[in-house]
Each structure stands twice: as structure tokens, then as C-alpha cells.
Image (tube, rainbow, N blue to C red):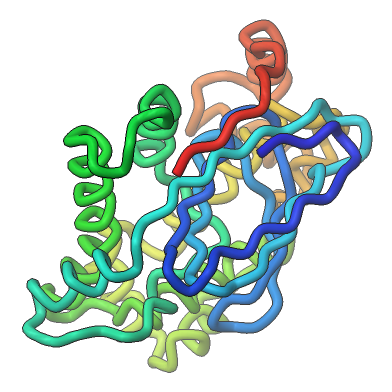
Length: 273
């Protein structure tokens, strides 16, 4: 699926399909429902959206004047996902909404999109297509199983609530007490369980999320660097530059120049399933 730069695209998988959307080129805004209600987020290359059956999402340019964006959709049969869940848990799952997510950074899945695009002319019974589909189904379920199997961790629902709050309030001064409330835990137990779930403290995770989001805006947007910093929760340009350099190894302006130099031209529209 591709946009001419100003069009809005609507996508809604049927009840038989679970869809992974991955951005191939450009940047776009995605809007839709998740467990916390109506949400929106900005996708950049390396991000994916996991769309549960019958969920409607709206894709549009991230901001006026940006180059066209292109999205690939990878469809997984619902019956395969339910079979994978049943095989591993001994139960038959009917609800796949726990896997639904408007945005997550997953370069591993995103990198598979180009390979699947080359195989889009193959039949669904082709061994390569079948193997890739089964692998993705198992991969999607892995974070859920890993989180449940480790004692002392946040539940998948708690982790989604906390990270979703971070994304939604990235420009604000987020406190540990606010995050603990989202998880329904005391501050002490929240910090301990979050670290067990992610192998990072909440503030480390938040700082990396802010830097990751800033890199996306710097690479594909045209906003002034100081505005990018404020959007990502850095109170002053000096603070933004200092933290960015510590994580990335260069200043925000140097990163933007490198991204502009490496940027590829748009490619033609394509889809896969």
C-alpha cells in the first residue's frame, strides 16, 4: 500500500486474518483502537503494527510536505495463530486482541517484509511461504510466553499499559509514580517487576524510547531540532543534545545530516500477504 503524500488509507483485516503492517519507506501516522481506547502513533521504518481481525486502522502522512509513505501488509491466518497458542498452552484461544498493537519497534519482523515481497507471487501452499507464515506466528507469541514464564515480571497487560502511557505522554515529564499507577502497583514493586520484564529500569527504557523517537523524527521530518527535542520530552535544546550524543554518539544536527545523505528515493507501491 502506498500514499501519494496527502491521501488517507483505511485498512481492516477480515475475521480470518491477523495482519502485520510494516513501513517500507517514509513516515506515517496510524490511528485505531487498542486495549486503552482510541489511539494514534507515528510509524517509521523498523516499526510494525499488529492488527487483530476486524480492527480498522487509518494511515495518513505524519505531517504535511513529507514524501509518500509505503506500507507492506503480511497476513497470517487466524486459525494458525489459534493452533499455535493451543499447542503451547494446551488451550484453544479465541481472542487475539492481546497481540494487537498500533506500534512496536521490531526491525526483525520489518526486515522480513522485503523477502516476503519477493515471494508474493508464490501460492500460499509454497514451502517458503508456509514456513515464513509459521515462523511469524510463533514469533508473535514468543513475547507473551516469555513474559508469563518468568516470575516477578509485569503481566503482558501491565507492560502494554505502561509502555503505551510512555508513548502517549512522551512530551510530558513522566514520573515513576505515574507509571506505577498504570501498572496498578506500588512504586517499589513496579520498578522491580519492570526491570525483570525488560532488563532495564523504567527511566532507562523511557530515555531510550525518547531517543529512538527523536531519531525517527530527525530522519524523516523537517521540524526544527529544538521542536523535535520538546516533542520527545527533552526540556531544553542543551539537554536534548547532551542525552542524544551520549546515546547515539553524535549531535542531533549531525544525525539529521547523515540521515538526509543516506535517504533513498521512494519505491513503487507493493503489497504482500
